[in-house]
Structures are given as C-alpha cells and as structure tokens.
Image (cartoon, rainbow over all chains, first blue to last red):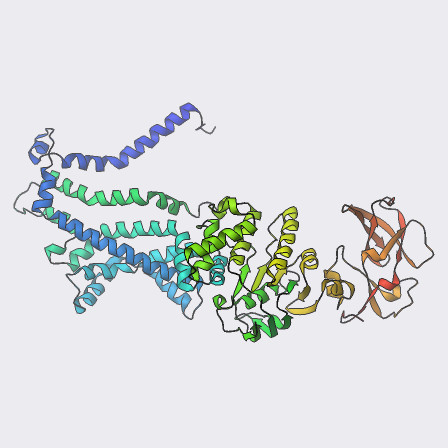
Length: 275
Length: 340
C-alpha cells in the first residue's frame, strides 16, 4: 500500500524528513559560521565565546578584503563575458546553417569531455607568451568560453519557435536585435542558470588562479583561503576559527547571488521537465 | 499598396526535391488573393518567399515594381501574420503591437498612440497590459493582426491565421479580415487549406498542387469553370462527383471524357423520373443545417447529393434515383484531367 502523503500524519513525516535532510546539508555551513565567531583559545578549550576578531584579522591582516574584490571582479567579468559569448554562440548554432557548423558544434561538445587540468599547461604557456600571467586578464580570459554554457543555451534556444525570430525580422529587426530583443528575454531562465553556474565555478576555481598568479595582490579568495593553512608552517595548530571566518567571507557572496537569482534558477533547472 | 509579381519561381532545398516548379502569379495592388491547396502543395513556401524568409532558387519576385529577391524581410514593407501568431511572450499586448514601430525608431509617444488606436479598432484596449499567455486564442489572433496593422504596411501576408480558432471564432474573424481589407485597401495574400475561407475572402484564388499553380481566378470562375479535375474536386463542399461519361445513362454529350457533377446538380427522386437519372441506393445522410447531404451507392460509384431539409427523405438502404443536370456537368480529359 502506498503511503498517503496528503494525510496530516503523512505531512508531518514528510516535513520531518525534509527538515532532517536540510539540516544534514546545512550543518557544516552552520558549524563553520558558529566556529568563526569563537576565539581560537575558547574553541580549543571547549568553551563558548563570541568575537568578531577573526573577521577583523582576516580582513585587516590577511588581506581578505582585497581577495574578495579580486574574486568579485574575476567571477563577475567571467560571468558577464562568458554569458555573452555563450549566448551568441548558442544562437548561431541553434539558428544558422553554415559550412562546418555541425563540426564546430561537435568540437564545442567535445570540450565538455576534456578535464580542465589537461588544458592547464597549454593555457599557462599561451598566457605566459602573451605576457598575461599575473594579471586580471590572465585569470579571466581562459574562463570566458564555456562549452557547457554554449551547449546548454543552444538546446534552450532550439526550443524557442523559429516563428518568433521570423516575426521579429518581419517587424524590421536585424539578427542582433532578434537575439537581444526576442531570444535573450525569452531565454532568461536558462541564462540566469548558466550565469550562476559560471559565477560559482569561477568563484570556486582554485587551481588556475594558483598557477597563473604570483602577486599576492591578485590572489582570489580560494588561493587566499588555502594560504591560511600555511601561514605558520612551524606551528602544528591551525587557527580554525580564523579559517572559518575566511570561509564564511568566501561563501557569503555566493549565497547572496543565489538568493538574487533563485527564482530564475529554479525555473531554469525545471525547464524541459514539463512542456 | 503594392503589386506582387512572381515570375517562374522555383524553390528547392539542399539535398531535397524541388517544391515549387516555376510558379507565375500576378497580384494587383490592393487585391485580396487567397492561395489554397492541400498540405505540402507549396503554398506556405510561396508566402515565405514573398516575405523574404526564404530565398527562391530561381525566378523573379517583384514587389511594388522593384525586384525584391535580394531584399531582407525588413526592407520589403510587408507585414506578416503567422499560423501560430508568433507573439512575443515576454512583451505586453501594447509592446507587441508597437514593436515594429519601435524598431523603426518611431518616437515613443507616437508609437504608443498608434498601438492604442489599433487596439481600439480590434477591441483589444482592455488587454493592452496583458501578456500573450493571459489571452484567449481569438485575442491572440487579433494581437497578431494588430501587430501587422500598426506599421501601415502596404502588403499583408497571412499564413493560415485562422486555423487554430474554433469554428464560431473563425467565421467571425473571417468577416473582420474582410472588413479590414476594405478599410485598409492593402494588398493581402492569404494562405489556407480551407476552401470555405478561400471562397469567402478572396478577390482571386490561386489553387496549388504539388508545387504547381493549377488555376488563378475569381472564386466564381473557379467554382463555375474549374481548370482541371483537381481544382473541381478541391473547391466546393460537398465535393464534386466524378463519373465516366459513357457509363452515364441518357448522356448525349462527348463520351470519352470524365464528367464532374456538383452535388447540387443531382436531384433526388424516390421513383424513376422522366429525365435522365442514375439509379442508386441511399447509404447515409448528414444534416448540415439548412440541407441534408446524401451519400449514395450507385453502379457508377459513391455519389453525393444535397436535398433541402423540408423534403421528406427516404431511409438509408432505400432505392432512389438521382436526376442529373446535364447542363451543369463539367467535362474533364480522362488522361490529363484538364477541362475538356
């Protein structure tokens, strides 16, 4: 017999299960936020305390305000430029027939199969030759072209009736106006989803900034965070409350971003599930 | 108002067969032309070629006396209404109607005034702030018309714009479109597979089949003097009956032809009449409102006739006689199907 989820007992059980699952996912985050307000002494002694000193230390002493700015600039530009490139590529692949088009699209899809670490050295050598290491451009350029975003958006745009493009052409639009005034607004859920995906991917990117950047002033949050583990190599004890304060600074903008685009993101994720 | 002249238009797709085989069509400025034909006959392709949404493989497209083959759709001064309306789902009714004017950089105040004027004409004023998703089928259809009208184009192309509407709304919209044509005086090319729409709307009808133009004439001429067996069978409801002339009792005309008899040219008798008639058996009847359609089995094949409602009808299975009007018979060549 199937459980009756609409009965009041069934609802209670469901709510309890959902709450338990939510707590399970949230507990590490809540624990790290709680820990970030403890002093190191209190934490290791097992006492409860409340202090903002870890945040002050992370920002004032360990330059996390700068890392935050760097991460915002790099992730922000990568997201905007990446979405622009991916949308235009997706529109071209979805709407135009041109010689080599299928081959080019196959190449884009093929990039999804290549682990990012394979491209690490070629990218490094290319940017070194171009003199772009140790610069924002060196952090941003390799991340702008996202095969996944182009593929995802192309599939979405293919689902938009071609008659809308044609109606816009008849109304007097050129190809760019069709894209900007018709396709992009209709594709907003997919574009927001991809934007958040690109932003989070770039925000969490650790390996490439580590390889491409030597100047401490250009560190992103992830590189800066890793640096906290090796501040005092001679000491065995890691200042976990400080690390957690820095971690909280790292995850907060992503959470904020999620809240801002959540409405569009959920629609994006569920698109295609129903007609 | 623009005239449209199509000369020897051919269209074939890459690695595909030719879908239009040298179509010639001359549409006068201000004329209402309906292109009609069965699915796959090339009527929508022809419309899209006029619109510039597809390019002809060969032939000339002249719009308003100018060769338009290489002109982009936006440069042809043509408005188009699509079968599925193609309204922009993210824009309100007002924005949909004004979009074409906005693209042409018409000042905001002017274009909004025009959008409201058009909405008033089409009784869309209460819905100006709604998005297409919140409109009924008929309202969407009117928005599509409004979008086309707002630009004051000289030519309107309509690709089966009524096919998604229910019957009552379709009849109402048909009248509105006819009225619109009278008001605007624009050239209209209307594609449909519905012969009733074609006969009721057109100044002239272009009948197409398999990428060939079969006949281009006024509704009356096409109905009264169909150019071939296909046109005769396609236009007219119920469809024309075809019988071999030599098998028809009492027929005194040419015998090596096929005869076309419209249902109204057959008259029902319960007993053998004096005049030449076909012996048959009533298979079933359909009431259409003012009259009955009679489906009859005869030695010549299945025949369709019509009878007024007032007339007492025999029961299905009864023997009947169908008197034919020899003067109303159409003669077609047996091999080519052309009018004899």
